[in-house]
Image: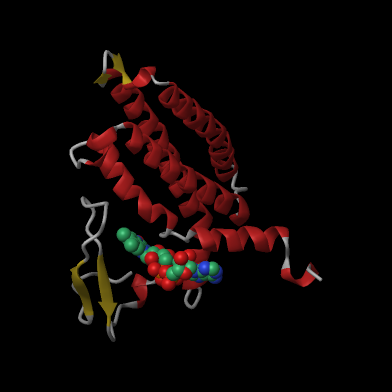
Length: 200
Ligand SMILES: Cc1cc2nc3c(=O)[nH]c(=O)nc-3n(C[C@H](O)[C@H](O)[C@H](O)COP(=O)(O)OP(=O)(O)OC[C@H]3O[C@@H](n4cnc5c(N)ncnc54)[C@H](O)[C@@H]3O)c2cc1C
């Protein structure tokens, strides 16, 4: 643990992000910082392994966040399409709207079962890296797809910052990159189903 007022600790400038604007992000620099032995968390020289051990839990958190956001976006969109009048009808009356929302609702329901299963495995101390990678990958990909389609159903207002769907769309993009990118999740899953030493 390094307190921010230690000599040698400094922050870079605040980075301007596409989304997550309520959360500051900056680089940090550690140059010849000295800390007392009592600041050690866990075991010496095991930092990387200790962090790796927690990654499944972090990926589950990302899946849970993705699931919550995509379910919320579907609710916002159901409300919006029912309220938006268009040529004597509402957007909710178009077959395309109804089918899109049906598709999203079905995919969200299936995804919820897997995420819940992973939460139960985590609570039992049994969540493994592959399951966590599957949850993160599929959930944040579905989140991106649902937010894009929900924004589309909002029409032009969907692109306007005062609508939560616009902010959720911008905020969600990082989920496919941070905490292990989609490509890294695919690597974890493929290594589990096709172990390298058994391939040929
Ligand atoms: C807003 C924000 C907040 C962040 N917060 C934190 C934080 O709190 N803590 C923290 O530690 N980090 C944080 N990060 C960093 C984030 O975890 C990394 O950006 C992310 O892990 C990707 O690493 P990278 O940027 O180095 O991309 P790179 O590793 O350079 O990846 C570039 C591209 O190559 C692909 N790639 C990489 N490896 C492979 C591979 N083996 N096979 C195929 N493709 C591959 C990637 O998927 C990506 O498409 C944050 C980043 C952002 C933008």
